[in-house]
Image (tube, rainbow, N blue to C red; front, side):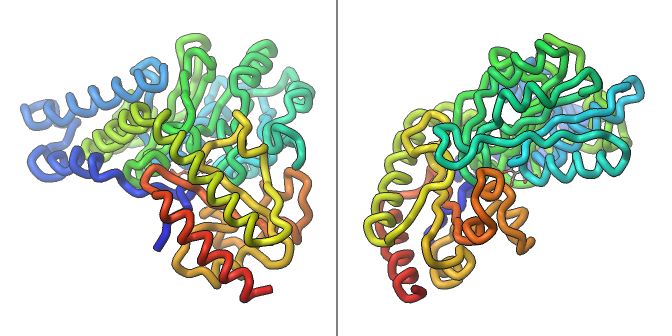
Length: 386
Ligand SMILES: Cc1ncc(COP(=O)(O)O)c(C=O)c1O
């Protein structure tokens, strides 16, 4: 199988697995057992791991809360801000192309009485296709806005948001900014303090770590961030997120992040070349392919992302006819849902065009040979289908 679905998830790097194992075998103690050395050893490992991760993304160490992944982080950030007992504001702003882990949270809050603005993105053909329209974002904010939630990088079309411009615009109006950075961490440089984002979600399995572990940065020292806990219990993590912490997964996430940061520049160069090669080979052999999202050479596109619109067949049919290549027709979370991609629709494509769109995510462990082999299989399957 040729795995070209690195936006859905990435394989766990063998070096990450190696770093993780001792914390499952030898050092298994509960990190919250302060009464013995074994517990304190696990707690120390967690503390170091969190400090290293915070350092890697320019966040204060005491602001990083460990969660089960970006879905939980987004819930904690958005619900946490809105549901805080001192929150008086009742309006939220987000973007049409967000992941369901944001859109479904705000839809829930809408049912609970919040007013929601879902801002449009630049359309297909625009150099920043898929990026939030800043003028419309500014227009959406009002005196009752509690939070703006904008993703850093899109999981379907790879658009990178100019986050600094977003935070400047929102802070001028006194509004906090949450950012779902699940697709950005380890793929594009992130500096929480410099970009001045107030809350930031990340997920280890998007940067070659294990699934079921992620983080939320809550506060960067500039503005007060008050969260109502969404999971209560033993009071771990200063009561913001209760539950026994998982030393093995946290050590693994930290190792994965440090590798991703160290190797980012080099691996992005390789990944970009592979992605461009795949696109070239597919365009040469299949007529009428169009790109979804920003141009491939744009700084506003993730280097590993390729999303194409086919002329004559639906993505689902192409996927079924190419069983040895893993790619997708939308986000993994919505692939159980037969609706056409809301992201492709948001850039102005029709429902039929959305159904004819597919996503490839090239990753750090792919090879040049895989691009040719995948293009061969994809082109052959396409010819059979048309
Ligand atoms: C942009 C984005 N946000 C959130 C998520 C959910 O992350 P997790 O699987 O860690 O809950 C994903 C993963 O599919 C994603 O791509």
